[in-house]
Image (cartoon, rainbow, N blue to C red; front, side, top):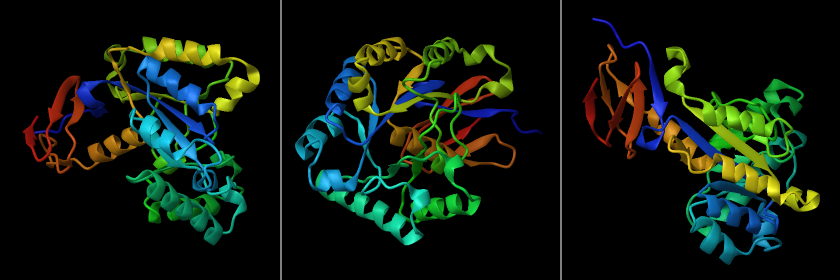
Length: 285
């Protein structure tokens, strides 16, 4: 008797790859961003500051509720005044984050559980303990993930969801090369230990397209990445929540039986064979 060798998460429907977008600050140019994402069937997370939403300095509450959320996109927090966490005392960071979450939930309904760090790559934490303090605060505030402002070139899901480093900013000179690599990637043709799910994560600010007058670049990105039969198009939060549900699966000691205690139907690959498990189901592999 021995356990199976490899088990990897698969996205809904058994899909091996996912694509997500994350855009900051809630500029009026997000309207064109969302229109373009809708046109191509893509999903985006918009990261908003509490001050702008509370005072309706940018996108209106009606637009956020009746277009952004109604079309399946996500709203996440981006600090109250867009202050970089590494510059704040812990109590200031906690208040910035909590106040923003309270405002967004009051104005928009639902639960806000995502965060994009204002002006921050994890390397900008001068001391590792500063990041640990920030992560602890986010966890205690029920923030499930934190997206850094950087480009990792990676297709992997994060090991630490509060240090989620996107694949690429939309203006990276190598973006389309990596995008083509991702699209061509066939996990069935990779070595078995490389069958982990893959993600292409694009981030930026929509006002950058307006400033550079290169909206055609967004169209090119969206047209290349959309409509793929092996890709799940999801928000940041949907991907994080699905992965957390997968991590909640309960396995027997020999890896032959699995119980799903979550409310998600979950998909996974065991030694190259696809399985799905319904909520509350026990499955024998």
